[in-house]
Image (tube, rainbow, N blue to C red; front, side):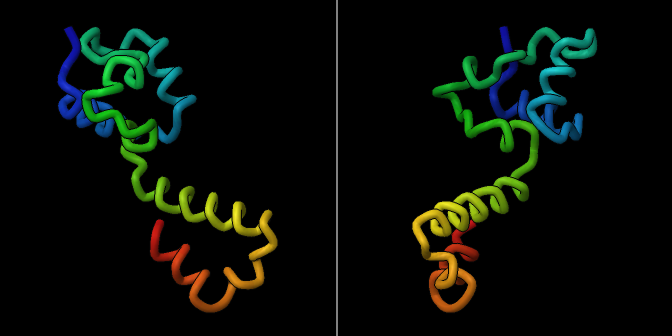
Length: 96
């Protein structure tokens, strides 16, 4: 039986892992408790799962990545000059 999503996530946050690769390495070690799943995305899919950035406690990084994703998506559409100035830039920046 696994811990609740909230309890497991709190434990994982305390590990201060930086990314999914570090999580995988931790799972391979003998340090991971048996009540913490190695594949949390499968176990907690409909129980609060919100991605590995949330699982690992990297929410601030998530906002930056979301903004950068929107920036590069707009840049591919040829909107980059409008993103750097004015409303489009402010809109993308404030959403992340």
